[in-house]
Image (tube, rainbow, N blue to C red):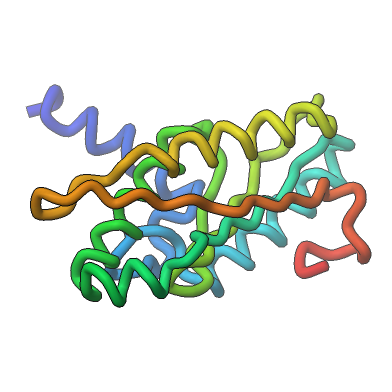
Length: 163
């Protein structure tokens, strides 16, 4: 009995801290915008309190409308789900991903001691590479690309998570 409950306790403890109980998008399973923004604010406060670093990355799928036109909405939804899964696999367990629109995502890295421009560029490249692998949908290979931008929290235009 205990051996069956331990994995559930482990998952619940980690996921409750990282926003698992917050509202999630029905298609991708990623945090909804409001939950993500709350998490960004919490991360910002933690960064300020600890004197650490974090970054926000924005990811936009290029030419998503063409995927919908060519393959249909259900295939496009599958592409979004796969992209979400791939981004999750490219990040650390403590990083959070939110979905802002059908084809727009935001990533908030957890606070760390060292996070410079080079590490942000490497992370953006890793996310792009993960997304650009072909996605198989009903026998078709769909190729998507993404644009990734980022802002180091210490370089944000204001002194809040929203900024």
